[in-house]
Image (tube, rainbow, N blue to C red):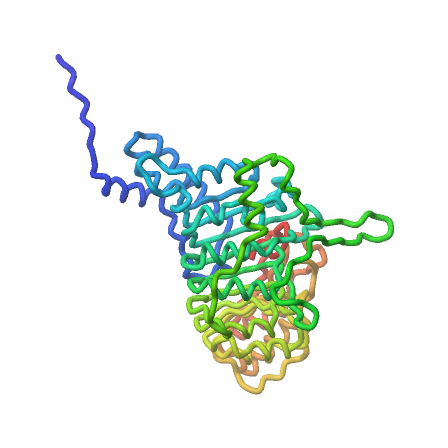
Length: 457
């Protein structure tokens, strides 16, 4: 009996593309509509890794599948090991057969994690090409999400970062970027202003290690320091950071042509043309975190849709009131770290506030005196990241406010602490009973302490 011929079902390319799109899609990876502070970052990374494995497997099924997968293989790029950067850069500059567009043009999300999770990297290489993320930002001109978290081994201090990086982001990403998440890269507040004013599509922004701009001492957009010396006392040698890369020596990682591009970017990069005057409007921004929050400089901006704000301003209540003009009444979530501001004063500035996070080791709370009830506040979180701070005085104050009907919508008080905090004792039964009697949930949440506390934010 003759064997039946093998029949292969052939789908139109459009149908096949739709199938593999759905098979590899992770919607939250490119969704910037919710606040990034409620994102389970570890879960998203795991989903990206699983999706990448599926893409690679489908790509090796056949030539047809491979050609279809070319559109999605580089849609999300994630790097944990620096030694892969040179090969990836070459790949992003290359073009698939019969294509006229480099692969990097298909990249919509770029995540760079260096020194995270105890994975070592050559920190000196930062000064060779870190000012363009080693060419990765220019190679991906259609980026919608950029996440760069760089953890140094020297006291976990941020990298000296050449302002060419901020110019590169402004020049390459202004028309596309919706989320910017930077940690471990030192940037002064005047350069934050100059970069963000170009990013008008931005929806979520988190920038760690922002330093203040002092108009009495600093020159606007001047050259950044090339050296930082940190003393460790008389018995230890100081730690020195230097941005003095010698481009005449052969690179360990990159070709001579690539190194010449790094050098040219550091010497010749410039800000894109910008003619509008302050205040600069970011019409889509709903989530903002700047560390250290400069309440005077931030008034250069207008954020009409802002919902979630982290204010690590380490200042007195005057800093909160002076920045009030740029914050819309629609703000619903606030993290506030400052001094001399009572809970009543803090929430009094924001009539629509629903969630208040108070990092207790950074706050000094005077007694609250409510003059008017706050109708919207639902949750107060008292968070400890580095050291134990007794939250009981604040809990008592909140319970009194609820009892006096000054917080009619409050439903939960959450005490968040690191996983290892031996000085912490559980809340007493009395506090739990008082909360329950007022219809409140009082809970303690143990959060795994990250390498650096803000890395988990």
